[in-house]
Image (tube, rainbow over all chains, first blue to last red):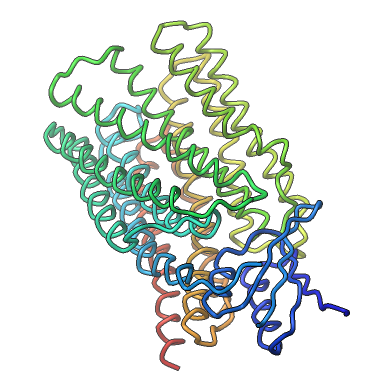
Length: 72
Length: 423
């Protein structure tokens, strides 16, 4: 399956957050995407928890943070 | 993969009013420092004049401390996932104690009132204590997350520096006000208190915040990990060693360590300037340029401090204080406020499910650019004011305008936030 990737690195806040919100708005039940950021987005993770999204954080070798986000 | 967890809802992060009360009170202390310069006689002629002591504490324990504590309440949850217990209660009580404490301390120093000095210092210690205990409790409660940054660790080191500064401050207040005998001469104890304050607390906090904020808002490459890994612990270890050398009267060792600390802080400023030169921004905005000027002011202040090590003429220490406190911390803090406050307003609206306006609509560029230009004019007047009292008074007048304007710009964001809420 070709999983979409949203690369929001190198953008000034709040643009990465806005990109994530746009991708979340398009997400259908059962779908997932990977969000790539320069750093750990604690406020976004708390929002994902609140709204019932599943997420898995991993650190890449280049220091970026990749978050797999799924809508159950 | 983690699943929904209502206990981690972002309502746990401090409400907007928690940091904002600090950010809105802070400029009033800068304004009062300007008043002291305007109305006092020969305030900048020596670091020991009542006016200079009052102005320094209005700036450091008033303006800087308010912003730094307010920013930590916001940044610890975002950077380190810390959740403050009773966030509003902690913000309310620490804010009240810090505000009254800084007023009492500065008033006591200006008018030679020992009881006000002691009372102010104790209130400040109380406000700091409440904040530090809450932060510690939040750190213990926070989930253990692998974070690819040394910022959370260095924020803790800075908080240790704050605790040392506050305890030394109360000891000094008791020595001055009650004649309590300290284990070392008063000028040396003052040097320890001041150095722990500007470097152990302010310097490490500025650096730890920069590890995150500079790449994030100024779109620069990250600070090299081999630098951030050692810088904070290195400065703190150097500061402890320097303090011991000073206390034990080991002059040679304390001079070498003093120079090493100056070079260490200069390395942070130089590296920040180098990263800024590699920004991916096409046109640097006003806060970007203000942050760059703050780093240059810190380097100039460190040069003045180095001259003071070789030549004990009064003006070197006053120049260093003016350049590092107003030029360095004042500039960097203003630049950060102009990024943090609109961002918090934006986040607040977004979290409330309201379509937030563009950040530039929350705070337009022009008033920010003009206020930051005035900040530079004040710094130039302060530097000249070290040598001419009449110019120090002009610097005071300009400083009142500078901080009044900073407050107005913060209020402008709140006004636009309110408008967005009701449209």
